[in-house]
Amino acid sequence: MSTLAGLPADLLESLEGITSMGVITGAGVSAESGIQTYRGQGGLYDDEAEGDATVEALSASTLHHDPDRTWRVVAELARRSVDAAPNPAHHAIAQLEQNLTRFVLLTQNVDGLHKLAGSRNVIDIHGDVLDTRCRDCGARGRFTPEEVRALEGTPFCPDCGGVRRPNAVLFGEMLPEDKVRRMHQEFYADPPDLVLIAGTTAVFPYIAEPIVVANQRGRLTIEVNPEPTIVSPHVRWSLRGKAGEVLPLIAEALTSD
Ligand code: OAD
Image (cartoon, rainbow, N blue to C red; front, top):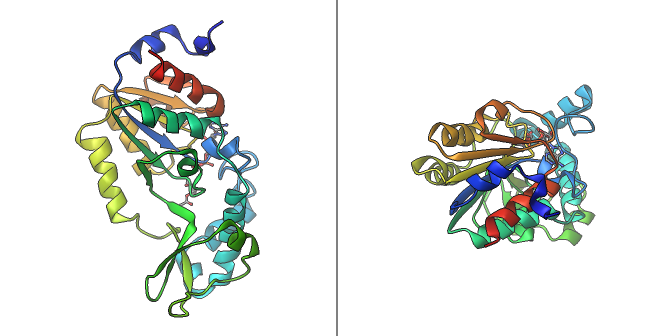
């Protein structure tokens, strides 16, 4: 039996001739690497009281008046990231980029696993939890895994002594303008032939919109998620499965002759 047996025959047929692709990912793509998702059973926000406290800790206003509290949560997220390794979903996405003429990955994940797997044209719209910038002088930095494991409390800027902040989007903050511009160029000007969304509840409109637009403009659209989401009614194919199992099948279908 072919390894592609898990994909419907008419989906395989519609993948023929695809040369450009956009992929949109969320926490579910890292679930099989052992990283907790945000929503749903066992997610970071699953327990309502703890979830609210986490959201508050990850907000711009908490960073402003109590950076230690923000850093306690960020340091924990960063430790989980450096202790994790890319799974077959990350590798399949990197393989797709190598084999298609045009490829873009929009991810909400801050764990850096896509880049570690080899993805290059990545719009990490929420940033990367290992990257920092100084709140005062703006100097950029990046923690090594050893620094992350040893991190306690607020880190300070080696240049000016100011508070270092994660170079990631906190609640109550705007998205980085340059990344929003790239997202528009890649997904709206001339949407890729295929747009695939995986492992996200797509609660943010800027995540749901590119796939809805691609579908409206006649592009092939696929969702990979064990559960239905708000974008499910707007995609051509809803594949109910784990990213680490379904994405390698799609990569194989698109990269074999
Ligand atoms: P969520 O935690 O909201 O959603 C995770 C999704 O992954 C759910 O739809 C699950 O059904 C699905 N899922 C779980 N396991 C999976 C697997 N093995 N394969 C495929 N899918 C699986 O995560 P996001 O949608 O990424 O923002 O959350 C969006 C944003 O909300 C995050 O980037 C974060 C959070 O607040 C910031 O930190 C700014």
